[in-house]
Image 1 (cartoon, rainbow, N blue to C red):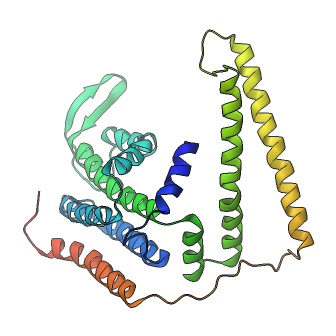
Image 2 (cartoon, rainbow, N blue to C red; image 1 turned 180 degrees about the vertical axis):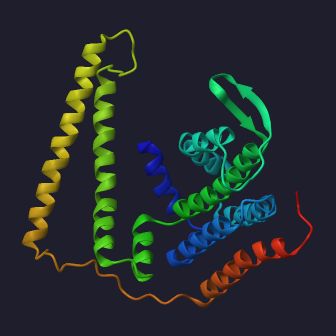
Image 3 (cartoon, rainbow, N blue to C red; image 1 turned 135 degrees about the vertical axis):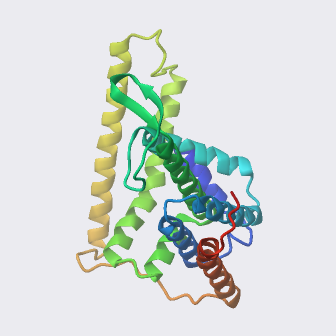
Length: 275
């Protein structure tokens, strides 16, 4: 997981037409796509809207020069989060349907409904497309650029300062974790090696976690003391300079927003469906 964090940031430092876009443009497009998909009613029309949005994402991803394998690996990495939520929908009744037809009856009074399966697939389409745009944003935008873009878009200074601190030291503790992990590996310690006594593995993991906690506390104390010496206080804010968008960025942003707004409306007003 730590290595994937470093890899995401390395990918964000690559050069392409999408990478060179201002972070505000990519943030606006990502949020617009997510809001448009969430606003689409829970009906079969989401298949058409989702397919068109995913094609739009694929075009943007091809412009980044990143491999499709990277996207697939990052999308699959979060399956435990959204996959479980979608799976359990097939057992539940929701407010979007009035009549339910049982497909299969299981012990303990559990039933699988046809309407719930359809709802789960609709939810699956929404999740996949929304996650695709989030992966596009994170894979093509440096973290500090994303923070500066959000601050220029009106993110409160307090949140910007807190997020800036988190981003600055997230990789520091990532490096510390990696060094500790490499040290344990050089000593042939594996927490999942069943040949080692369970109490011994538990004790070593406890020492490691305790060491990381103490180091993080000491690091935080040193950073806070240094910032106070440099005039940090309650009225301190993260300075973000003004940066106007280029003409090409305005064109891309306008066309993308018009496309995102027009697609759901066109599918809703057109009787034909892709599926």
